[in-house]
Length: 134
Image (cartoon, rainbow, N blue to C red; front, side, top):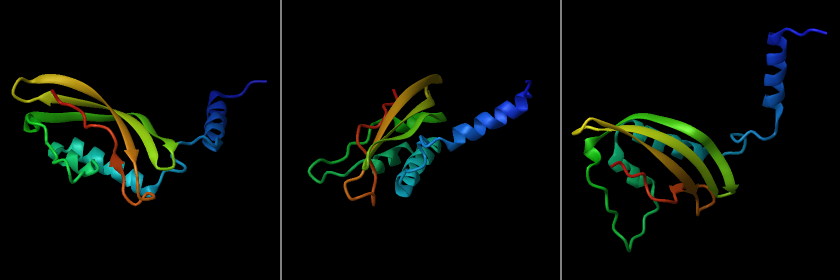
């Protein structure tokens, strides 16, 4: 019995879409919004604003890395989407391409993002340091 490739493709798509392992199905809305806002911040080159996504510690002043004005982000690509580690801890990986403007050097950095909430999902923060653009 022969099935056209188109029919097989449609059936496979429907089967995969019906799987209960969709990583997007249970993402908290505020987490998705925070991760997308972080992406936009980086894509548009507002790199000093990345520090707003870190949990503030009143006993430690935030030190913004020098030279961020010398970085132009050229690409922000999701390598692995948000995946649940626990209810209040999620992880995703992105690849950021950028240029050091003064030297016209193209570089890449893999950004392992761990997002957590300590207030039942009202606010989400990055758990680990921000990527280094050097």
